[in-house]
Length: 277
Image (cartoon, rainbow, N blue to C red):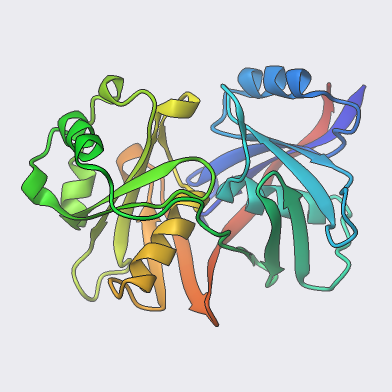
């Protein structure tokens, strides 16, 4: 059995400086065990499998796997899979508007030509982090409690908890001991000075799904945008940087429009061919 295959670099205008996702475009007939085996072999933060939709509103259905398990939703795989689907002949029901079906439900994706963006899905958990959880993260991050200027559950499927530190430099200085939080998915965000290219630096630590630090993370940035904009800590439009600590140059465009937060960025097919599955 074969499948059309693409590997897409997401959230960077510089090739090989964003976050890659492997996309199998003809996954009908594969069961979950086979998908998981393939995802473990590709050893990327996510591997996706495109299937026929099960509801009439959707253009396709997507299953998203890390090396260790399946996710109900993830951001950079959503944009990367949409780009691969379009470049391999996919035709949305409405021009410029793709509807992706995944375990988290239906996700709207806008096609603005060079840039794709997805509508942030609803968060399934919000509110402040519990004191004992904060203490675990503080110990793992090697920081002081006083450095935290905000904290929140920002879970839209992967289980995100988030800390806001005062500055981007503090975020970039983190050298966490992830063995202390092996069951968590934690984001850190800190502001750049006014007038900088980007408003925030973001880092994502995901030991819970077999990934140490994720280079550029759409799902985390989506829910961070909902939290920060919704609480007045960020403007309705801003750019976040992610991946700097890993030598990447991720850029995530966050825009709030009519109550919806959109998460956009570049998505470029770098590898394309046929995979034996």
